[in-house]
Every structure is written in structure tokens, then in C-alpha cells.
Image (cartoon, rainbow, N blue to C red; front, side):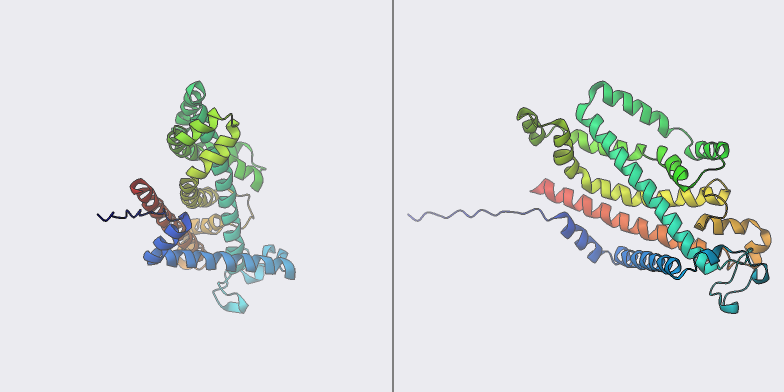
Length: 305
């Protein structure tokens, strides 16, 4: 009798990077969005570094009444000038950088704080989880924009730092709920119970055990929150409750459209900013959608292993 040799087929779960790369390769729109967003960021950063090195930075803030409302191409102004004689192109580049940096800062603070809170309440559970989640539920039903407007109206002499803090204070709840739901299932797995039995410190279990297994959804949440936070900053600045007056921002440039003459006859002042925020947000949402699909595909792959 011949003994049949059994062959073991080992299925290896693909890495997160390979799944994401495969998704972007398949989704041409998301790949184009990634290239477009990267090109915009590189160009904006290089321009802002150049004007600071060359010493031209302060000149973009100078009021020049002799050059107000110049049309694109006149006197060397690529996109024309605004009501103060400022270069529309220069303010667009500086405004995009400010809006992006504020959105990144708010996203980083809210994702970091929300993740830590979500991990702690999911790990310990009980009264801690119940108390924090009731507070989160209460914060969610509050009209955030109205509360931010009240805060900004009370404290009129605020800077960018305080503005970022106010936005962050009302934007961490969604991250907490998302991370908590994932961490709850992870905290019941065998590796967590084994770590507790071995006497591993709680903070080490949360940071080195549970957190890496929730990192994928955190990345997706951060990407989508970035677009939302950028939209909130632009909207508040447009309404006059965002960045301080005289600070370059996409919302500041859009606010010029409140004037009927500028809105209809001088579209070159606000239209580039509108197109910029539209392209950036669409690119971020497209990239976030691809990351979400790759995450779902990886989870399905793990379930079948």
C-alpha cells in the first residue's frame, strides 16, 4: 500500500500595504486623486517655503490701493488681485496651507484623544464605559457649529492655536465611538486574556496588543475626518467665525463672494478658492473610500483564513 502524502496549503493573509496598493491599482479614480492631492500639497509647501526664504512673505499682506481688482494676467498677477490689492494666487497658496494645516492639526488631536478614550473605556468597561458613553451621546446631539460660534463670539481676540483647540474639543466623539466598538471585540480575544493571565500591564496590552489591531479603521477615520475638519474650518471662516481677520484662508477668499459685485463680475477673486476646496475634499474622500474598501477586503480575507 502506498501512503498518500498530505499537503498542507498555507494561506497567508496579505499585508495591509499590499491590500491598499491593490485597491488603488484597481481604482483608477482613487489613484488619480492620490496623485492630484500629493501634487497640490508639494506645490503649496514649496511655494510657501520659497516666499519665506526669498523675503517676499510680508509683501503679500501689504495693501496696494493702486492695484485693486486687477484681472488675471495684468501687471504680472497670475490670478489678479482682490479688494486690498493682494495677489489672489499668493493668498490662495497661503490660504490652502493654513486650511490644510488646521485640518491636519484638528484631525491629529481628535483622532489621538478619541482613540485613547475609546481604548480605555472598552478595555475597562463597566461604570467607566457607561459614564463616558453617556457623555459622548450628550455631546453628539449638541449643535456643534452653533456652540463654536458662541465660543468664538465671546473670545474675539483668539489666535489659530485657540481656534484649533475649540474645533478639537467638539470633534473627538466619533473617533471614540468607532475605536470603542472595535476595541470591545478585541478585548475579548484570547491574546488579551492570555496577556492578563501573564500579568502584563494594562497599558501595554492596550498600546501593543489592542491598538495595532484597530489601526486600520483609525487610518480610514482620520482620512475622512480630515476632509470634514477642513470643510468646517472653511465654513466658519466664510461666516466670519473662523480664523482672525487678515489671515489667509480658503474661507477668507470665499467670503469676498458676499459682495454682489465680486460674486458676479469678479469671479476670479473667489472662484480659485472654491475650486481648490472642491478638488481637495473630493480627493480626500476618494482616497478615504479606497482605504475603507481595502480594509473591508482585508477583514473578509482574515475571516476566510
